[in-house]
Amino acid sequence: GQNIDQPTEMTATEGAIVQINCTYQTSGFNGLFWYQQHAGEAPTFLSYNVLDGLEEKGRFSSFLSRSKGYSYLLLKELQMKDSASYLCAVRGETGGSYIPTFGRGTSLIVHP
Amino acid sequence: DSGVTQTPKHLITATGQRVTLRCSPRSGDLSVYWYQQSLDQGLQFLIQYYNGEERAKGNILERFSAQQFPDLHSELNLSSLELGDSALYFCASSPLPVFLDNEQFFGPGTRLTVL
Image (cartoon, rainbow over all chains, first blue to last red; front, side, top):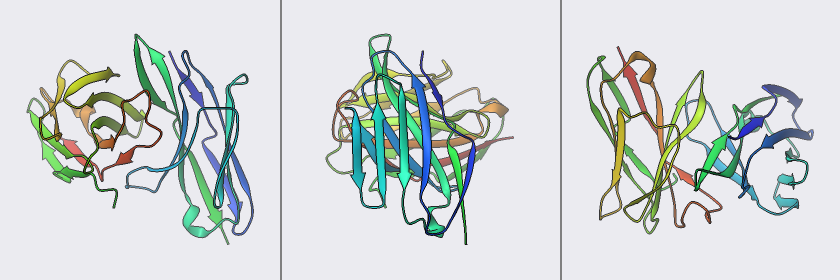
């Protein structure tokens, strides 16, 4: 099976930097995704990592270490609109198919 | 706007009933995913189709079934509904098969309430 852990809630200040960690256990690792989801809305894609290292996309960066089963999402220059839930998802092999499994999400609260 | 459309937006029904949720993927996308999101379970993968064929199955109940039609739209059928089936149901699409895709585009969701 697959297991994903991420903190339930984090708070940060506008303009600051925040790092959201995700640890996972999976068989047949085939990619890790980060999504942003505002309350009552659909998830929107932020990043994808399949090889070790850092992927940077504007104010957002995501890091992956496959040997440690660890990823983080780094958000810089925080804005109030970044208050949302951040979902870590891992795609792994289960019963001959590749299945995406999502963590419970980290609720990020950005305050002035 | 992701380009993925889902109908209806809201659905209220009674226990024991059957409903059909519809999804149209982005133009050109061949993969369709279905997810269920409830407060206690988070986002759960249900099933995935690629170009009309079932390719991956997650925690989908036997009371639920889905299919993808030749025009690539997909339907999720939920039968013998229970109170616990109340949730947001999302459809997502991507242009690639499940083991290759690096981004999924989510529709706005259908909120199902079972009374």
